Length: 186
Image (cartoon, rainbow, N blue to C red):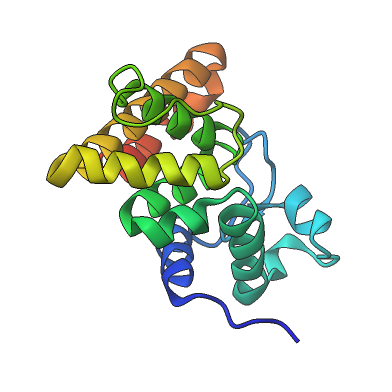
């Protein structure tokens, strides 16, 4: 029997689905067909066999929950800070789940005052016990502004990513303003 889905994580999924919208097949999108923000290759890899236009929302929610929240560790971060967990999750949906964990680990190391506040962690993109411990220590040591500063730092990396991929591929200009509006400036 499947365990019930965590309402906190489902809230993150609902917010992201609200940004992604329904069906799209934009010619400039290298992901091709999407529905609810899920690209066809991801849907197929998770068992979808029908046309993308017909992908049910609840199927997309299950993919988001498992592939974009639980597996990369963003759900575990959300249990510590809902705001940071949601930011990592949403960035993972839009930028790929491999980038935000690295950004998060790099910032945790950059904010630890040369290891005086808590030890450096491995920047391997794996959110596990060491990363979660460092995050708890970061929050405890950095105080009231810790979440706000981490959110700004993660958004800075996300914005830099959008600029980099847009400069590398002009067709991404079709999306850059929207990414900045809904993902970074929101």
